[in-house]
Each structure stands twice: as structure tokens, then as C-alpha cells.
Image 1 (tube, helix red, strand yellow):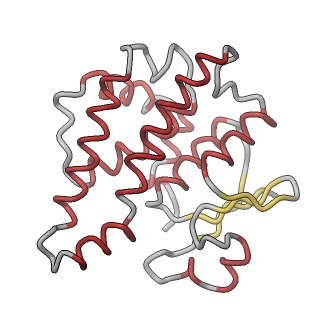
Image 2 (cartoon, rainbow, N blue to C red):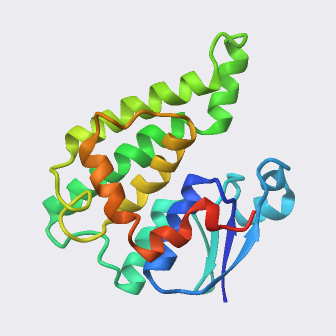
Length: 205
């Protein structure tokens, strides 16, 4: 049985839920409640020494880091999330990393809480989130070519990274009015069962 150690609002966990859905896999969920500090427990640190979610138990392995997990699922379940041509693969990875490695880390709640505390609360969490999410999504908007999805006519790693970030953008009141390409991609992805069923509102918490 595949087991996902998950937290409903975690962007990284959300990505892996989408990928598992695209692979038509069934899995068991064990909630690691970040608010209760479950991720700091010895039990969870044995799964993931970074103390992060998700962790995925699959094929006799315990896997961590969402992008690595998704690429493993892509390679072992033939999901087609990365194009064949090296240049196209690099483009998709650049789009995915623009979210997963630029926006996501700086908007991690641990980072934001530290920044707020060190500023003597001159920085507000919402202000921080809106600034960095907007900045990152504006850049991504300019990287997109207006295709049905982030790259071409099929779902890629970039789309899997985008959708959870848009959930965060909505949560923090980011204005997407000037991002028509992103909004169009989001509308298409929302039609797909794997994306709909992975949404935090559909997840146990």
C-alpha cells in the first residue's frame, strides 16, 4: 500500500497528491499536523530528517522532496510530465522551479514567521506573502507562452507546481487580474479530476 504523510495545506504535499492522482494510484493518508508540531517528532524525523512534508512510502522506499517524488512517479508510471526534447524539458523545469524554488521557499511559514519576528513585527505576514507571491507570479506570467497549460497541450511538472501556489495566492489575497495566461491555465487545470481531488478542501485535515 502506498502511504502519504501529508498536511492538507502544504504546497509540496498538494503537488504529490496531484501526481498520485494523475497516476491513478490509490494511497493511504497519514496526517502530519504541522500546527501541532507532528513534523518535529522523532517518528516523523525518522521518515524525513528535514522534518518536512510530504514523505511518500512507495515501492519499498521512503521518499521526500516533492519534485523528486513527482519525477520518480513520472519515470516509473510513465506520466509524461516532462517532454522528450532536452530543450523542452529544460523549459518545463524552469517554469516549475520558478514556483517550487523561488516563490515557495521564501513563503514557507517558518521563513515568514522568522522574518516577522526579526522585524519587531514591522513586517506583516500578509504583506510578505502578497509581495513575494505577486513578484514570482508576475515573472512566471511573462515566462508562459499562452498555451493551454504551462507548456503545450499536456499537463507537465510545471502545472503541478503552479496550482498549489495559486491556492496560496488566493488564500493571501493576491490579485491575479494582470495575469491572464496564469488564470487561463488555472481554469483548464481545475477541470481535471486529479487536480480537483488534490485540492486542500478535498483533503482530510
